[in-house]
Amino acid sequence: MHILGLPTDIFNVYSASVKFKTYQARWQIGDIYVSGDARKTEDNPQGLGCYLVMTGRGCDDIFRILDSRNYTFGDMFRRCERRYGLDNFHFTRLDIAIDDRNEKPFFTIEQIKKKCEKEEFISNSEGYHFDESKFDDFDTAKTVYIGAGKSGLSYRFYDKDKEVCLKHNKTLDEVGSWKRTEMQLRDDKAHAFAMTFKDRPLELGELAFGLLANNLRFVVPNRNESNKSRWKTCRFWERFLGAVEVLKLQVPKQQNSLEETQQWLTEGGVISA
Image (cartoon, rainbow, N blue to C red; front, side):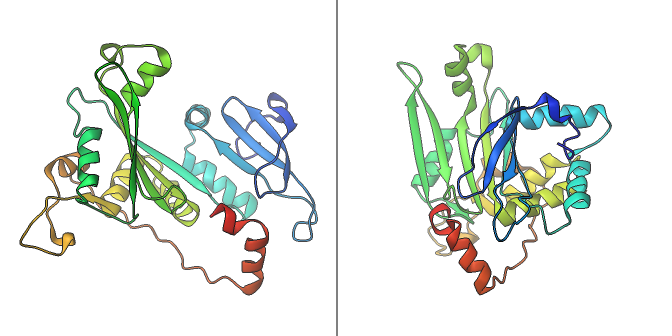
C-alpha cells in the first residue's frame, strides 16, 4: 500500500493463499490485489514480503492515480527499489497489449493462423496453437498462440472486437474493428522489460513494438533459400511494426547455487515451471 500510495483502510481484507507462496491474506480494491501476511518460515522468520497483482483495469486505475500526482509507473518502480532494494523485488509476469483499431486492420487473425500453419514465422518461442469459438452463424472468433504460456516470452493474437461483442451483447458495427496483439513476459524477461520501462515511462508503445520486432517475424517463403532466417519479412508485418528500433532485453545469466536449486524444487518449481 505504501508503494501504491493508497490508504490501507480502503482495501477489503480476507484470507487467501497464492499457489507455492506462503501468503495468508489478501488486500483488494477493484482489480488491484496485494497478498501478504506471509507465514513465518526458516528462510523468512519475520514473515515479510508481499505479492502485487494488477489486471488491465487495475493498471488503468493506478495510472490515473499516478498521473493525478504527476507521477509515472517509472516513479512507482523506483519507489520499489528504494523501499526494498534492487535484489528484493521482482516482476514475475507482465502482459503488454497492442491494439489495432483501424477500420482496415494491418492483418487479420486468419492471416496469422495461416502463416503459423505454413511455418512461415521466426520466433524466440517454439510451438503454436489455435482457439476458435462460434461468433455467429457465419463466422468465428479466433485466437492464435505462439510459444508456451510458461516460457519467458509468448504471444497471443485475437479478435478483440468479437470478444467485446459477445461479452457486452453489441454488434461489430457498434464496436468497430479491433485486433489485439499481446506479449506475455515472465520472470527475468518481465523484470528486464519493466526496468527498461522504468527509465522510459512515456515510451511504452515504442518499447513494445521494439520487443516484438526483435523476437517475432512473419516471413515470405523462398524456395531458393533453405535458411529461413534469410527469408524476407512479409509486408503486413513490416507495415504493422513500422520504422521501429529493435529492443534487446538485458537479462542477466543466473548461476544458482545448490541451496537455491533445492529451495526452488521444494517450493514447487518443477510443477509450476
